Length: 528
Image (cartoon, rainbow, N blue to C red; front, side, top):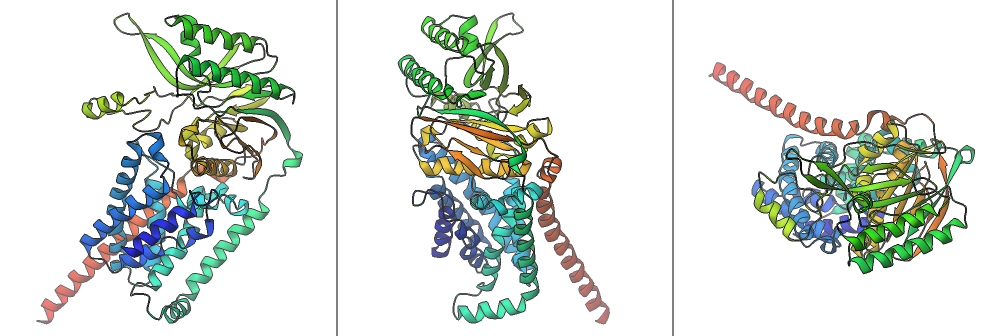
């Protein structure tokens, strides 16, 4: 229990936390070694129980800020990861039984395969992938242009798996055990050191010369308002702040002004066409009057409402979490609709299978959106850009697909103000650093509370605003139109490979052992 608690604490603190808003990245290399050591001494039932314990405790500490997002979130996420770890620990135990020598190699691969697997499907969640802890080290971050986050996770988790193997029998005479194992495993450790050195060398060498790139001047508005708090009065005050900051930003002569996710809440199109709420329609009119007076394009996060005519001939409203592009003079020229929605709070596709859960989620005030279907690439004055919204930039496949379709810049619109936690803001922002390096394309983040920033194609933050202040950031964004990186070409293939390798290694070893036992049995019968 003590070893697992120690792992949970070190794992959580290696990320941005309530203790240190930037995290302690070096802890990530050793965070899970107490857990790996403990697994060697567990029985099978203990592996299930203690795995559940570690998953729950780790994510309560790591994602403590989720209680502000939704009371269900701080319950659901730790329980989900408790379940994952209760399945993962027996797999590690099986690996330890099958690969008595050098099980730490297989365990490292299993860990990365697990990380890949848990980002898939409805419950996919990228927070807590251990490679993201290294976001402050651009040379290592740039390795993601080859392997995605998965190669970095492998480099980070290996020391924990190795030390767990060293101390599998306990911590007495720890120095002697460490020395002996290092000598015994010197070839493997030398290979790891060589790979790590090669990765760093690649990161130092493989950089984009941003001084030779054209730039796109953007102004990012951080008005420090949670758009979902309050009603008409709050929306009006929010619009006043957005207009004020935008007018100040125009003095910097930007090419575009960008507002955050749902910075303006009333659905612009719906309230223009269907004036069912006169007060909201009037507020939309005020926004449109403002945009018509501007000689600069605007990109605005909006809860877009559109109408369809259903099979009965009745008008039905569909709501999307969207980004709307307005050219200079206020004409609406394009829309992107969020495709990867937050499970349970933005989207629950199992209404028919689990109507009770669906109704409960709706009754507790969750805003369900329709899912967008198009990877929209906007273009202004020769600059092509795409706009993953909030949670979407935590998944590499979305930004990668935008780039494959022509985007030269990734513009993320985010609302994280609800968290009231700097650690939560930085935990989200660290993903964007990797999105930039993976594709060697600049990433721009416009948030209503933080972290508003500009990240260059090398994964370096070149401008930012402190969280939870009312301000704006004007920056010159490097536009890289160069060749695709290996990651942009192949995506998360390395993650899938690690998953297949871990499963294949265990299955092949089991088959070999079973065949060996049968052969021994036949030989024993023949001798008898």
